[in-house]
Length: 114
Image (cartoon, rainbow, N blue to C red):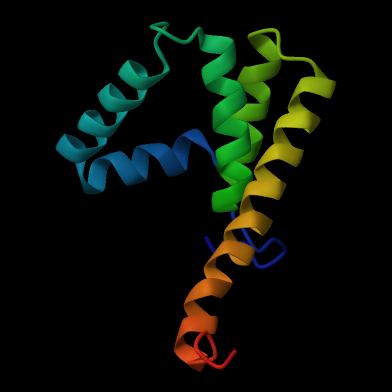
């Protein structure tokens, strides 16, 4: 059933089941990868979730933003920590656009004009 009220359909268990049924081996491999990545290691789970929230804002994935924010809060991340991480992600995204202007400047051929 198509949901015309929202740009992004809600993530539901039914949706997850349908997706898994379409590619079960790949789904299981992805789930194992995800579990392994978010396991405590050199970084604790709280820090990993905070990173995930920041990256989700850069990749602009609404599902990841919602899911990882929820998990981060459960792992003890505070609202202030979340917002600060989001601001770091925002600066990095803006900084990347600024840094990549070098490509356009090079293409313009204006580096040797001075």
